[in-house]
Image (cartoon, rainbow, N blue to C red; front, side, top):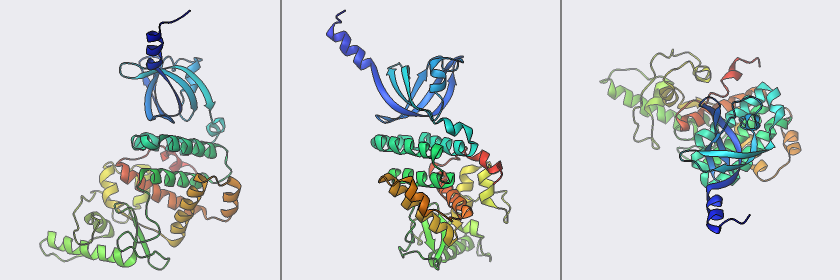
Length: 343
């Protein structure tokens, strides 16, 4: 049957193909599902999987998060419709390991949060996301290390990778002797002299705002008061009420015990004190992320990681997640479950 050339042209315009990772789903109507995709060809995209919530249908399993599919879509009025779908990779081993599955879902959550800013670099990010999910599923390396490397890769593509080598205020090289804290707002580490200068400026501002009353603000209040890229112009930011001074704030934020999340991130976690071991772990993970981008093999990384301290890795990863949440202005919930698992 010979079709009219105009009709053939219309059909080609009305359909298009994508290769994409499923990064989120939610129900639509009684049996359909909206799938959030990150496609190699166009970045973050949403489409409808008709009948995907009916057991046994072709799209039921293929529309699950973390699957990679090649698909044909038809243009719709508001959302495109998946008409054909072929599985490329399902990462079945992830479903058998709760810890690794949680980290992979965290990758998906990060993608839905920051994906709009990656559209111009969609092919590169798609390749890195696919690689990272595959490593999480199959690699013998520690999941927290793999996650750190993915976080560095994401932040580098977004143009907000934290500064680890020099003080973000004075630009002096960082050493074990002068290392102080990681500042989320400035996007990197402060040396001790600059941190103490920040506290002194904050104390002066606190003294002025309270009508000359004596007293030095807490570390948390100092971090909340200082909010600029120069020490000459401190700006007051809201301090979260209802947080006990001696309470472990990092734990509070990890398990979601502070309702006013944004204020908590801005104030209580503007500065996080870091040990030299955690700092080194961050630098090593940044380097490993760059080497993976350049095609280094897993075996080479395994050899370099023997004897790495697990606690330092977890602390480094919490710092990176806190920084990402600060930049996003929201919590990442995918890893909440891990806080309750035995270490």
